[in-house]
Each structure stands twice: as C-alpha cells, then as structure tokens.
Image (cartoon, rainbow, N blue to C red; front, side, top):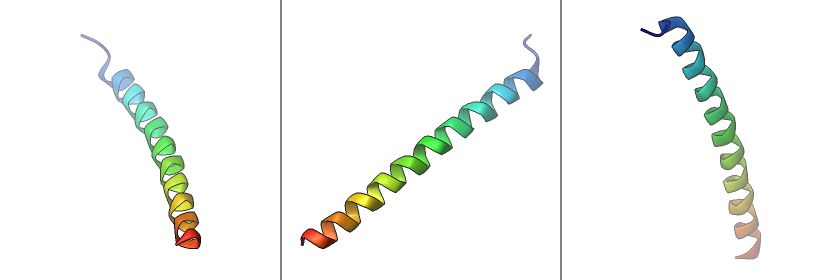
Length: 40
C-alpha cells in the first residue's frame, strides 16, 4: 500500500494548485464583469 501521508501531501498540493487557478479565474471573471458594467 502507498504511504498515506505522501498521498495526503500530493492531494493538498493538488488542491493548492486548483485553489490558485480558481482564484485567478475568479479574478478574470470579476474583471470581465466590471468591463461589462462599463460597457452597458
């Protein structure tokens, strides 16, 4: 069986990457929304 602690470490690293990606996506969405408000 794989070392469970190593698996947890890999998972948390994966989640960290996903969180950073999600934050940047949310930032882009917010940017698009403000641009849309200016246009309309």
